[in-house]
Image 1: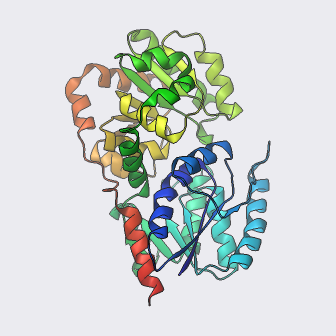
Image 2: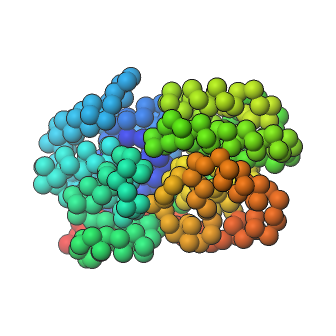
Image 3: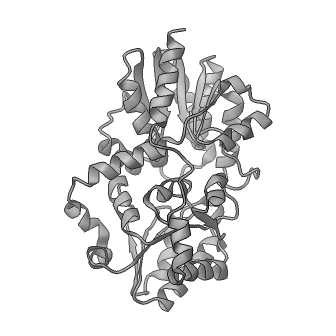
Length: 377
């Protein structure tokens, strides 16, 4: 059975890499990997880490392109890829423009689509934007739905998706995280230190670290300014703690972050990190403030409490399990909850010790096994 795997961003690559490896290990499956390069530089970092060489690289990243440009380009290019390779199934992941446009192209060519990380919902098409719409639309096009949790599967059943097409597998991001964690346990981080900038002394020492990531489109504008103000207040109240923020390259993030936070001594604004040093930094941190979906899934496996700077999350399992807490971008709420985690040892322990609801690191093997079995039918 010929499987075409398509992805284009760093988060997709992280979550698809262990699945690509699992497919390649199955004698009953033939693997072709296509990248759209929706994110060029950050995508290449992950491909290098997992030692994946794409069979097809569409190289679609262009300066200043918007969602219209990107969606149209992917749709047209994927038409040509599908007609040339004629796979038996196409795998897409998550909720990016690459995911939706590639699924639509496969649908137009009557090729079955497998949706990895299916069934996530916030029930608000504008939060996150455009990701919520992308994943909902992909669900209508997909033939196979690989859900991280039973709650995701329930979402799909309630939307009328055929229950026989829904498979609860766990999340492949845990597979990737555990693989990288074990890999860096044997690798000295010396090569990464030049990327740490003025955070190097803090990271090499024993000072407590708060890790921050923030890049979501729905937080552009006032949201970014509000959570940056919160970070500044946390830093001033806790001079012994170092806040490390790998800043996304998008000017809607990079501009206001630099303007508000650049002069705070214990806030370190550094360049985006490769995945391996980022996992190291997550593991080094005491708590994490983020608006990232992937970090909500990964950090619990490392025992790190997470404050999510979003108004809604498509990952409510982590909230229910107590590993993460939604705080939005409200300055006061972020500060109060961060201070509570820093000062209340029992609260910290409850969040740090909660069980990760997103899987056991075997999701990729389950998906590859299903596809191999399908190919024998």
